[in-house]
Length: 312
Length: 242
Image (cartoon, rainbow over all chains, first blue to last red; front, side, top):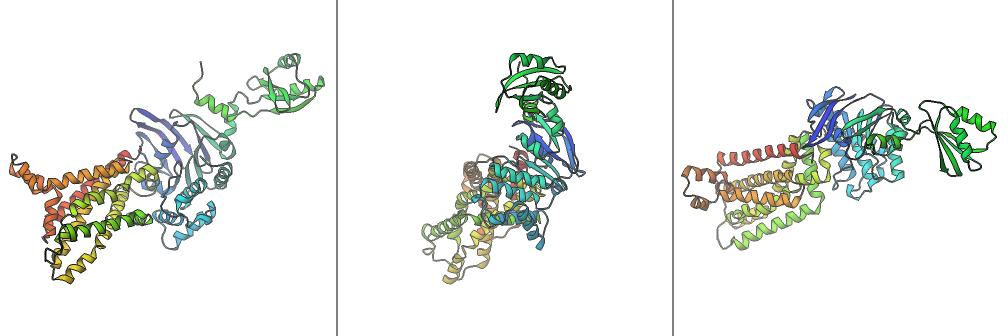
């Protein structure tokens, strides 16, 4: 549905996007991750035909962004960063404008406006001037604008940025509700969002793709992946730590603070399975535990490792 | 079709804010006041709108950049340009649609001066042909100023800068056509001074004001508008990223 091929964008001497390629298929929700200034927005602006690439190209449902920009725009719904809107219009007038530009006429205009009112729950504010709306509503109006022609492909630039937790959830639910019949590309720097709704994540840094994979695959790159967190009834002593360290596969054992007192974190050798031998040992020794958890790994740690240059 | 959609949204935009009404009131008051007081409409004892149109090129230096300044600066500043130009609208359609909307707004302003027409017809027997061509001249000149204002508003996100640039550019083009310019430039070959004067607004408006409908004058205004809008499109394409 969306194919991006070797996209490059220079702003003067700055290489904002430096050879990015990826492909998104139907049914995928692609999370676009990366620190600010990584090139996420620029990439999206090129795919939506707002900016012309310096080199490389992209195709949307087979239409080339350089050769058929109008056809590309017809296939897409785009929510630009920070939801720019015509402040002096009412929500109703604005959505009617977008519907007409999207080629609807007659009763189809209002029919589609009503449909997005429903999807984005905008009935209450339909006749308000846009400049009187809260940030959450603005975001939803801009979202509604992107949905008015029921596009198969949605490109959302930081759709939850600046919203409160409830509003974030509303937008997230909206995205999740559409995942079956659309291709969605959205950028964010909130990692829990990626975990919650993405089927695939792309981490971009310094204009290039660093990682491309499912969120659970990404977590495996975390040094915590497969680690054990154990809480003890009585604070663990140095002896216990040393004994646990002797179990094969345990690479490291650190004393950590847990909510119910002191605990230990055991890191394993690469793929080694340490949960069973550790549990057996604790049973043998009749050591009481109040917490025992196998860590999945943490996205934020992976994100940091990938996007931050290693400290010397 | 897309031009019409852009046009309607833009024109609606003018009337959604109080600025449009304030503009209309000030425009109507200033032009009428100048006609009656400064240019002695009654004392001339002639049923003509010449006193009304005499200072139009000067008023336009202030009024038209004010109408034009928000056209693109505002879109770029608020980011709505990202919305507009990712809809299935080409830059040409957007530039032309917005320009036509602002021009129509100025047309409305000019049309609202109709009591002046009623007044001269009440007072005497003016030549309707001259009145028509004077209005046409004012409308075309407004379009020419506006196209320059639209261009300067594409250059900067700052509306004040856009206003000043447009006023200065229009002033230069206006002054270039003043007869006295020929006097200052008498060291140049006549053909060159003639060329400079014919590039200015002034002569073209003057002849329309006198009731002379000349294809050359119409062509002048239309081609100036076309040129400025062409440049406008290029500037938008080049600067929309920033």
